[in-house]
Image 1 (cartoon, rainbow, N blue to C red):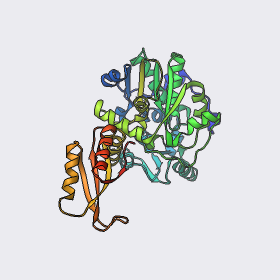
Image 2 (image 1 turned 90 degrees about the vertical axis):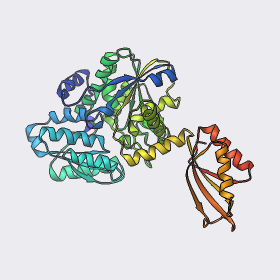
Image 3 (image 1 turned 30 degrees about the horizontal axis):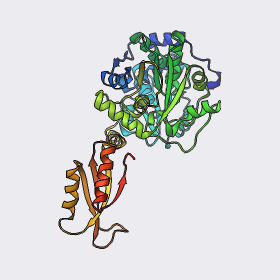
Image 4 (image 1 turned 30 degrees about the vertical axis):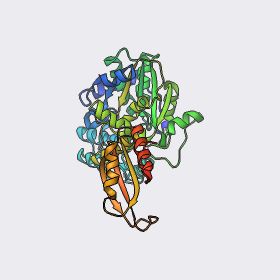
Length: 412
């Protein structure tokens, strides 16, 4: 069945899905953040789907979809394409229901998500560089083997399952005035917006996409679903470059605004959530709070809920993200400084850095780099800093002392 033939999801569909998933998906906490509320002079609520079974919201829609299958379909087995969280949701729920599952993931999916999906009982196939490549491979395998395809977002049962989050938000926070939701393919926000707008139409629904893969935002600007080329984002959970006509229609009807945030802004939000709220959230989930931290969320409403859609962040990615987050906030900078290649020269350089309280995290010499004069050496430094003003002070002090300085990964 093509997605164009699907009927829009209704409140009744979502209420039925709520009963279907009871016991197989938890009602995740919705907590007020005292820190962010105080800083931004609003009541900031966090809907913590990062604490869901499998670490993301996707098991809601997966359970609802699998329960809709006939016994004959269940015996065939299911297949899906996913950047990770939908994969884990389908694998987990399929195993719970005794259904065999195959998942096609892109080759750059974090290994933690690949291993977790296999651990939940699915056969994993790696193909392509993004979701759309994996999707095409999944369709090929589905046709070849006669499996049932479980789409990640363009399916009414999936959307209805994700919409149960909207019902929970209204139950947990009746005073909510705006809800901010990540957008990849659009299933999550389609479900949430349908549920909330049906019950409280005055609540604003604001979507967020990664600037490097903002297919839905561009589609709304053009008034029709489009496919983007040359897309990229570190938030692989929302890395989708082809807009679904099905979710597009619901988003066009129910979503008030879509904002975009850069990868550096997402990294900064992950860092802030970890430090200030003690919450580990993956890139897709952190996009919502990134709109607040960057000032892009310019709305008068005081009671705002941010959906933290998932927390499946592997250790390697976390390390890179934290470094990017520190750089974005001006708390780390990488410098290349040319000094004389003689005893005491490095001591003179580090003395200046000590005097202006720049903490040296890493240091290395390089005498062989092309362009460095004979008798000189390049020193590469990674410094822990106190903000953009401190970085400017460091650069100014070094330049006044006669050093030639290049900056890398700084906040300017």
